Amino acid sequence: MKVRLFSLIALVGVVFSCKDVEEPSPNNRIEGVYEFVSEGNNGWTEKKFNFVDLMEFNSDGTVTGEGYTTEIGSDEILGHRSYFSGTYSISGDKVTISYSESYFMGIADINYLPKEELTLAQGTDNIGSFSILENYSELMSICPNNGACGTPISFIRVE
Image (cartoon, rainbow, N blue to C red; front, top):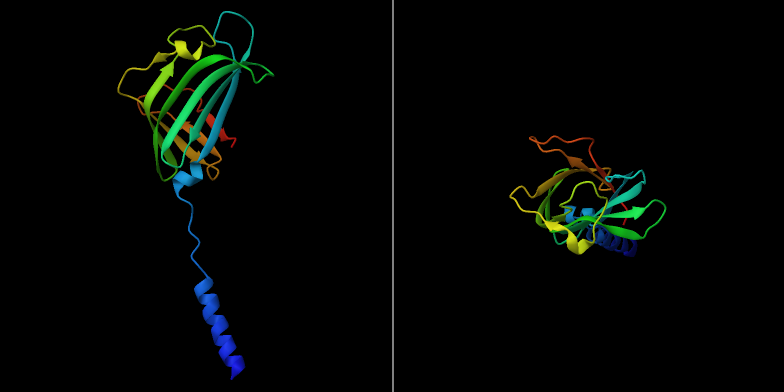
């Protein structure tokens, strides 16, 4: 009798101790820093630079980002090309960013400026979209229907 009672109590304990494991929300899954690095020169010299672009997603639905320039082989920031803040939403395998403030270089043919000299973007088309790939380890830019885009940009999760 004690064996049956113990078995019944053990069975009840196992059933009630098994909780459904909840999947983390999309906002928790995307949370982190994503980076895109390219090499180039937008100026008139032959010298090459690293162009670094970062986006940081927070679980509260906010996102910030910046683009800066470094010497090749160095982490020292020479200057900035852009920065932004905004909010994001996730639907399926797509994240859409709504930029609330976005600053950029208002001068062509240069590689960077001091951050305080960047220009506030004006306009109504302040949205960007990215495909979520490889279980939130990569974000690939999506060209808008009316856009003339080049090769898609791929941001890799670094944190």
